[in-house]
Image 1 (cartoon, one colour):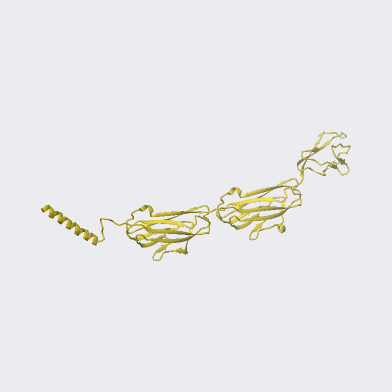
Image 2 (cartoon, rainbow, N blue to C red; image 1 turned 60 degrees about the vertical axis):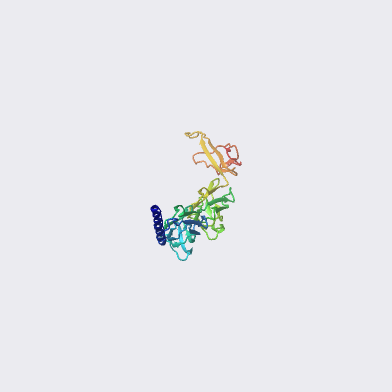
Length: 366
């Protein structure tokens, strides 16, 4: 009977303690907890310099207890500039762009809230991957699952790809002839990556004279024939421009090869493919390279001796030679006797050897 009363008394005491703890808000039978879940998205993962983007940060209380003193920190990383005017900060909360603290305060169980942060992608970020992180940094309660307190999202800043090509309308011009070089510049970058600060340099080589009056320089760009700088400025993705340079082939350039090169010399962004930044084209001016070799059969003759001078003309190319006349005036201390030739005739009065033969490449006459 005594044991029975002891059990009754213990039960009464326990019940009284339960009533007291319940009155104090303490429930040992089923302790309630918060569970703050952070998710983060961005409206565009592949962006360009100068583009506006929008991050959405959602905080949800998945626990069975209200959250208090909740602060989520999302400090925009280097490369992004905060845009307050296009951001949406929920009523009753504050966001400090200097610290990145989004002060939510209370968040009831099963409730959620969203913050929208607008930002502009800075210049000089092309080819960079920018990671933005949001995480719980303050909470009045213990969170039952810390694994979902942080969320991050990446954006890739696109890069341009400047391709330079060059052509000429006449590959084998004559001396004094006008020719046209066409330099085409195209931005083949992906995802609409614009190029800015773009300059392509094409210095006309020796042997050519620039003809400004007949050249075509695209509107909004400039070309300086002294420095060769074609200042394009900004070129959008998939856009192209053509510069047409008209030049005259100078005299005394016959048989010469003239190489003209255009290349990217300035660009604000890194180029995703630098292998196509340069283009060259050759012209071979019509004419031939004639080689003349002269020998004598006696270097130390006596007065009255007969000596023989031998002149050999050879066409070294790149084209056959026509109407060849070679002048060889005999000096005053020798008297002309006679000549023989493999082609043409020699006139002693004016010293001209009229070869009278079209010389193919590699051919010679004596």
